[in-house]
Length: 258
Image (cartoon, rainbow, N blue to C red; front, side):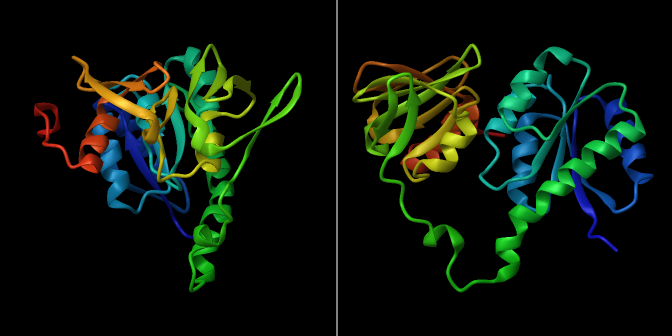
């Protein structure tokens, strides 16, 4: 018998949550581990642990589903979007979604999406099952040069020279001291390759090297506008702003309450 797939349902509509819960109850080897009504509660549930898959709506109060997905921790649960809005599918897959299921969700389609997610789980849990005395990440050699393919050939860039990367019109640009380069890497792939102690996913469209930030300007949304030493501006989402304040030891803002 397979281990139950632990699924978090995230939708601000009660009827949608009830429908998904009913469909999941009829599927074998699947358990509902919780429900969330907005992006913030999704992130809180994931931080608490015990979630393999999130069934995530696009439009929710506060953080959108895409915003919440971008802020999930490294090695976090897989995401299946369940939404009535087909126009966000390309963006969702670019951010690493396992599947994109349109409402009204049908049982067979949902089961197919969950099996796809289950098929990706072993690669993530296998290192933990090996119980090595040294964590696998610690054995991974530090990346000294990031190869960026260009028309003139491969540009080798030191991670320290990268200030940020941004997604615009489905293209990712890496901003460095050597210049700015378009790349075929997704933001998720860059986040995997670059040192996590310096690079942070501060927005669904931005990856930021905090060592290049000279100023954080507060926004009405509760986020920040990060200014880099080269004069670029990078938007920091409200949720990422909270994480930055915790990392920097700053006093909580009013938007951190509740």
